[in-house]
Image (cartoon, rainbow, N blue to C red; front, top):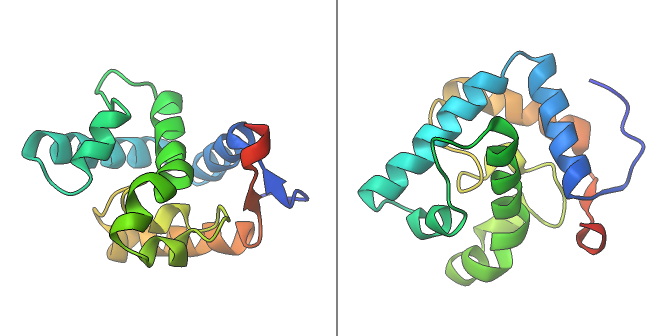
Length: 138
């Protein structure tokens, strides 16, 4: 990938890192399609996290960038508002760092996780381990 010297990243930097990571692996479209499909299906069928997805106004008209920012906002912002009240598992994936992004289903999706995305998630975690999310500069 590239050497990351930052110990903390803001929302825009986090977005950039995910974009660069996905682009280098040719996974931008696959991520976007899978994530959007998962979220719109959850909204339509009233499945898990549908209220969160409605709150963030996911739409088939979103650009990749808009969609990714919404995913980041769920990953970094919703943990305190919704998920941590319901379940403590989020702290296992989040812990204030960006490395669990691809593991956290509410922020991403569950389609093909074990067969495909787990290895991608492992690569992301290896490259971003220890990088904190900077709430103060967003």
